[in-house]
Length: 406
Image 1 (tube, rainbow, N blue to C red):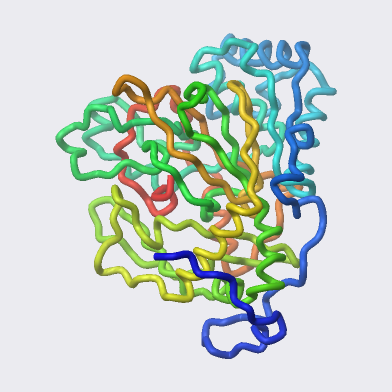
Image 2 (cartoon, rainbow, N blue to C red):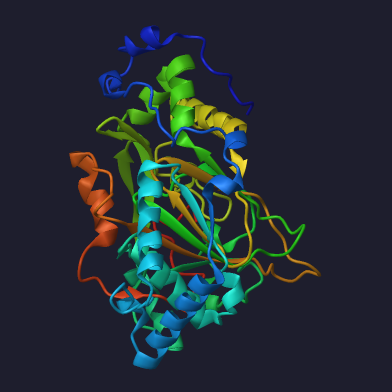
């Protein structure tokens, strides 16, 4: 299918549209302004990369050692248990949250590769550093659906995963019981279109353990959705009206049950801030996680909207400047991200490996629309057990609606 061009209709014409009962043109915010509206060519690494000094890296390493000596569980890592011993560094990390919520929406912390962390230490450092930026970590409410057979085999608890491993699992031996379970996008090597992770968390945090090597692919791309929003508001506002309609048919998978349909918008607003929640896999399915035939298909208007957003995302995006050891932080409500395909060598799995968490800072978090506040709050529910697995031993865990896009 060819990519449709943007509509020639003017803003005024489209805002007067009454063609859809789901249309809510009165909810469209005016043109958004500020540092979060940027075009890829404008966003040079010097604007978003923060280089940690040797002293700061040593302070982080010392905090990791203190956690290990104290025997602090990884789930209990927070500022009072991850002692940096350096108030200036603590303040520096805390200020990152404002940049993510009020600034560019993109920050990369660089230098941790010099600490030579092992796998466990890297997770401790990742969780500890991020706790100073956004103190709340999201858990996957679907993680308790882990197959009981796997849990028994691996002696794992059914606690909720708040840290995921983004890696190539396509070469892993597939257990007989998992032969009909698809791998999530975080476990395969194909390219991914621009998306936001729906109801997963305000801030997406990634720790680059291994970039896969030069020429192996897996490039990361980001784009300001606010830039896309302004362009559509001027040239094709009907796309925004379609995105704001609450009739997008998201398919949510369930363990040992039929999937269920969840209708909702892909564009939300709060106090003038457009918030993108567009992800294609739960709407279209993927080759490995196919859409159930009982689910309704997206409409022609919705398909056009997805094509229009992707077209503009490719036009306005930039490639993330990436080095091993980086901690990448993106505002998941205003920044869309994508990935290039990647590969291993000599028929072996790719060594590309990122750690992933979703975060929230209640001090700087954007207010959410009342109708969907519970959806945004659910990953941060209090009292839910947490799990930060050092190794990714479970790439076949049944895919939930939240994870089906990877």
